[in-house]
Amino acid sequence: MFELLIRSKKFLVGTTIVLAIILFGIVGPALTRDPLAYNPYNIAKPPSNDFPLGTGNFGEDELAQLCTGTRNSLMIGAIAGCLAMLIAVLVGGIGPYEGGLVDEIANAFTNVVMVFPMLPLLILLAAILEQRSMLLLATLIGLTSWPWAARCIRSQVLTLKERGFIDVARMSGMKDRKIVVAEIMPNMFAYIIIVFVVSLSIAVLTEAGLSMIGLGPDPSTNVTLGSMLYWVMNGTQKSLPWELWWCFIPPGLILTVFLVAVFIMHNGMDEVFNPRLRRV
Amino acid sequence: MKNPLSYPFVKFILKKGLFYLIVTFIALNFIFLIPRLMPGNPIDRMIPRDTTDIGRKNLRDELERYFGLNKSWSEQYVNFWSNLLRGDLGYATMSAYSFTPVVDAVMSKLPYTLVLVIPVLFIGFFLGNWIGARAAYAKGKISDAVYYLSVITSQMPFYWFAMVLLFLLAVNAKILPTGGTFTLQFIPGFDFASFKDALYHYILPFLTLLIITTGGWATGMRSMTLYELDAGYILYSRQLGFRNKKLMSYAERNAILPQFTGLNINLNNLIGMTMIIEIVFRWDGIGLLTLTAIQSRDYFMMLGTFILTMVVVVLGNFLVDVAYAFLDPRIRTGTGG
Image (cartoon, rainbow over all chains, first blue to last red; front, side, top):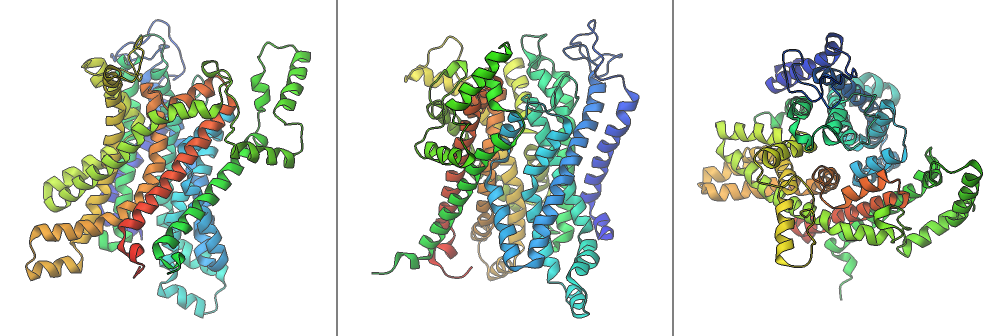
């Protein structure tokens, strides 16, 4: 599968950008100042040589905030994505393989959860849990965002199931569980990884949105891309927080580039897995 | 007379209606369980922080009795449903709505949210699909440009886009207001002046949501149309000498059907997006109400806004499915599919 994927230009470009942003999140915090170091002499200053991205409402270094924020947001996204993926593989993968009643129930469950408006539900859950850590928020996002991934995996398992080598495995007397582990999963691996990355990107987007309206982890101790937007919205230094463009343009730009890259990567993958789309 | 159940259309609608009833039932049970299973007691939040320990205990007992929380779970469950079916969602405790029924408070804000959601849903759908289909026919550079532009608009964080628009159009260019539903110190009424004022404040949140949703539809429609244009029936009709316009309409009709099934998910996302966009622009809808309820720790209002959002989403989904049944000839006539 990977040999095919590498030949897709969209997939390569998308993956490169995603990896670059992940690298930025890993390396960045080590090279910049403490993102929570407040400096009363440098409040809300525009970009300068000393502070390449300016300073925020409390005199914090925006570049340091951006690096640490990217790392923390990606971490929340990764945890939420893992959880969503795990549920999706269980609900979406086992159902169609077992078939019959199990499949009916799993599919109905996915459809029911899909109707739930995810963001209002998250807002409600986050509001009820007053003490929110990054881990808790990631868990909440993971628990609510899996239906999309479950559908993707379900349809992929359904197509794989019809393929010849599964029939051969079954005829050779392989046990069901072994077919899943030895035949289906290896063929799903690339697909699962990419669905995971898309879940991660959705989680990052959701986290930033929740944090921005003050429902994320405590913004005064946890730096995420959303907490940076939160302080722009709830800033105290200027009458119009929107004047601090250097505080909110960079985190949004990182998010946009990341999400677009993931989308293009996913699109490239779709073309590989679904050859009829390739010329589109 | 023919049995009405034998019409595929009726059957489809009944099936969908039953499904959404089940969804609502599960969601409402969930609402019952959330405050009882999750950590953090809502009663504790209603008690002012500076209450003495004895006062706190007495007040807690009193409130528990008042809300029926000292009864068994089964009794609470029956109470919960009987209140819900009577349309009683409790009373608001937040200062702006002190002790008005939650239903009334939410209902008074609902029009402000729907006035954003409904036009955006439909205009975005038609505009996005139109752009996407045109881009597919255009091919080449224009098609690619539309692809990247629509991917970027649909993928960028909507709340951030709202901030950028605010920064550009309201703070720098000063042509639009920075937020609110009406100008401050303006007393709204049912006249032209207040309509004009609300419209002036409406443009930015509307534009934000419209641009984001249009991008999403355009991306999908472009690839669906390209996919259809490649199909055998189009190639064959082209050989037969059909006019381009006719071919386009054939391809478009087939490409748009899967787009319709996306309307459900789009509606669900749009409600959530609207809630956050309202907060950014201080637009006086459900989203802003939810946030103020959270900030003033008004538990009933929080649950009430969610229940009504849920009802709106379920009803909307049902209507979209009914519309789909009208449009898809396979369901309408019950042949094929």
